[in-house]
Length: 288
Image (tube, rainbow, N blue to C red; front, side, top):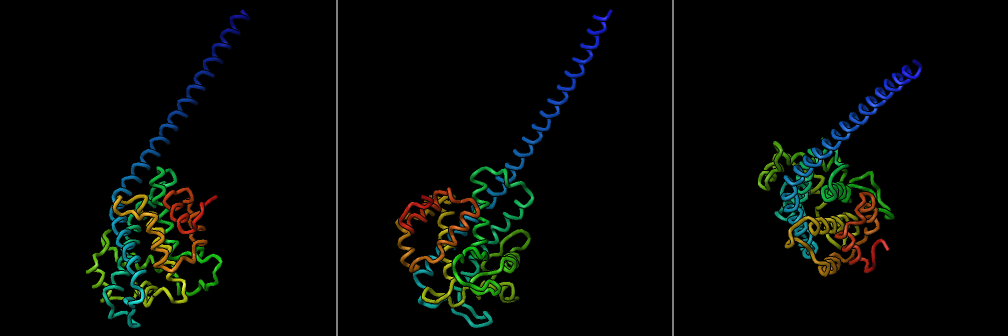
């Protein structure tokens, strides 16, 4: 009788434990499955949004890179001069401002969509694009780029406050599209105020001037080259032999230390295209 009772107890206990373990593992499997499905869904959406905007960002990056290179060669021709109110400005200054704003505006359109997604689980290349987006903004606005250099960050002299840059960017975005150059010109004629900060940043810029704004432009070009070399077409790539020519045209680079800080900040130190550029400039193995 006792043995029979014990058998019943063992059977009941075993059944309960078995059912409990089954529930636990089934529940865990469901959670794991849902987590995997969520991550895959997020990755697909991230990749889709990036692919939608990537081609245009690359196109404008090439255009801006070409303009900066052109400026480095022709800076002494004073094509960036303008009157104080910027109402009467030449094509070179207008188009330079537009290329900067349209580049960041296309980045902004992508960034808006990515804000609603968990980008921390992005594939490696997608995550690298996201890091470059942050890098580009900081090159124009962040104080780390001036590491080791005396500079008053309370005044927008050789940098642009990020909120003011965003305001200018948002002004040329209408109904989810970036204005054309002609539309930008009309918007500027109607109200120059949102764009003034970028005009002031570029107005009269030249290489011999004792200011740091041109150094930001130099670093911006290095970042653009690295970006195009990694994600652009082969015909958009800049050979490392060309970097020396760019360095000579620009009469050297003064903010490489700050550039490295930003690269480290966004964990881009293992990006070969950036490493190659730094090695070419510094003539030594970066990171060694």
